[in-house]
Image (cartoon, rainbow, N blue to C red; front, top):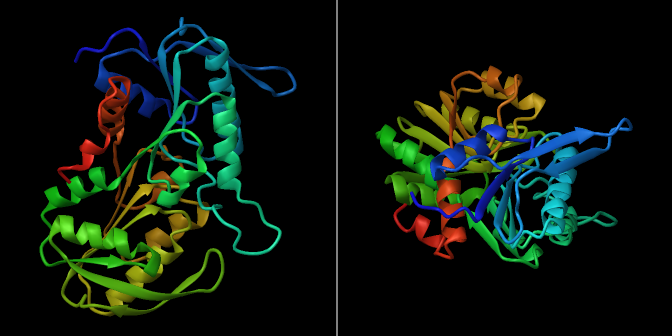
Length: 317
């Protein structure tokens, strides 16, 4: 694949394996940079490649530890801007703080907007992200945003499985559009779970609208964090006579309580992508499968670099 030497891709510390896989797809090396700390803990980054006049991309998920990875991204962007890069794209496979996107009660911040402002101020000319949790988050940025969908990778995997008697279940009302798309892509029926949220991490699934008895179930979402919603929905589906249950999520945040919940729930397979690398804790989930978004990201980077359409990536889902 021909790419000129004006393209440079750098990796933050949150997901160097994914950044390396993107570079392998494009047939270029990862950009040279050194990260170090001052004695007081402050991080310093030095870019070792010449980036003057070049098209630069920084791959960094703002996952756990979120604040450290966010600040590292900001430093990287500022470093490239001051080194006279022609264009700087923040490649954020997982955008932390995305769920803090509104004032749902008094005296709380809209942190997603704050973070978007910080990324722009630090020097990003555009953003490339995957599943921002809510499409309107693109409007929080005052720079162009290319928004990729994890369902391109997940739907391909589940389509290749050729699941018979498939019902796609939306674990809550907010996920209905996503479930409908998967049902259309995979040729399955559609059902929805009516739930009651008891707290930030506890959910009670109360009823299923749709037929699940004797059916194989697929539930997909953008984020699996505490897994309370999906595990409660899986248990209810099993009680109603469902057979095999599959769960897919673009971002495997997988908080500590999620591991125990997923292992106890009647779920046959959990599928996530590598937007967030699995840590030792999350690797303990029974039957977990990780799909790579490297080819999708690499193709998007190539198209952005060549000023070609990114949305065409999804025409054949």
